Length: 126
Image (tube, one colour):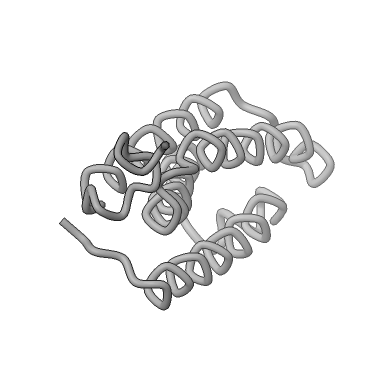
């Protein structure tokens, strides 16, 4: 189990912000330029990105895992809607990869967190 301090939580949020920035830039690189940087399938990039981003966010703020997971999914959907503007197509497989990544990331983060760090514990909800 991982016990969270304020400074570790802030560092995780900063890391999540950096990951989100890289994902955002990568999402709007034209397909031809993206293929020059990586040969990995786009859906695999979606899976890894959504997993990592969700993992960092939920690890930092486990009590808000539902909201954070929904935010990452919403961002993934928005990216798919906007990608045709840069010559990339919206793909259902990418959305499925985002959903899968969010589930994996949230589950891993919640498993790793110490129960004392969960602000929704029954003893504290009164």
